[in-house]
Image (cartoon, rainbow, N blue to C red; front, side, top):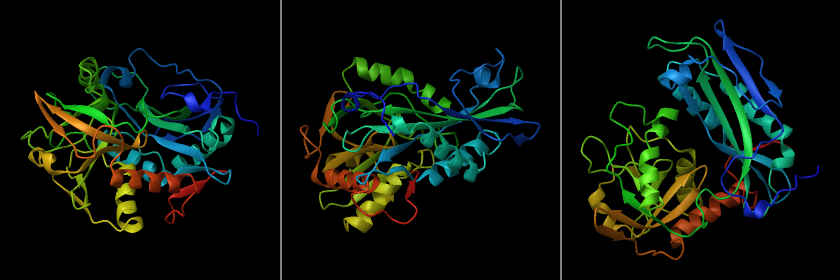
Length: 341
């Protein structure tokens, strides 16, 4: 199979239209058989629920070309589970988890020419999503929905690759206690747009959101979980009911414990502790893990010992090991890698 003529090594994290996408519709209480289509447009009522009340959820995962030339997807079953949990919270019908994985497989196969070659640093990003499609003017859930999956080849999420980021403590809240912070709903990201645009204008790469109730505990950024390393090499991640359960973060914790023999801990992380950590990173599907060199808090700077030039040693080992698993250089735990072709 001949790959598309794309400058793979210089891709940004943006949208490129590919050949096929998957569509299934929920009407009269049941999901239709999904189909692949070349049509990348969506037609709906001006009063569609998604346009009026933001009833939409999504997922993100990647396909890779491994060292031995196979095309694989990383832990799609966990994305299926998370989409199902999001759907329940948003009063949407659950798309069957096994059909989710099948849809991902179909889209990757149909767009195999867009899966970047091994060694280019690029990947094929998959975006499954669901939205309320019928007209709704009173505040209530939709009755009809669409589930779709499209894909696009992408480069690194953060420009500059592994260069440590500078982030700021946001004055805004990402999620409230008992809210929707633990699901992947579009509305969670809409509220972060003003904050991230403001951060970029001020010269920062991202925001750090604190817990809305006390503003004393670290939660996450607008699109990634935090991961910290103590000075005695313990890997720590924040625990909160309003943090999105990142599949990458969970995978990194397993890598830290089972591959690198490090002690791991998921717990509440107080902002006052940050000065005592040796390393900090942001982890998620898009970024894998990106090092943080500096946190700016209203005139005060917290600089991590790992510095602003490169990843800290533990963060680097975590990154190398997880990407090694994803790319087929290292043996994966059972069930982590789904071979497409």
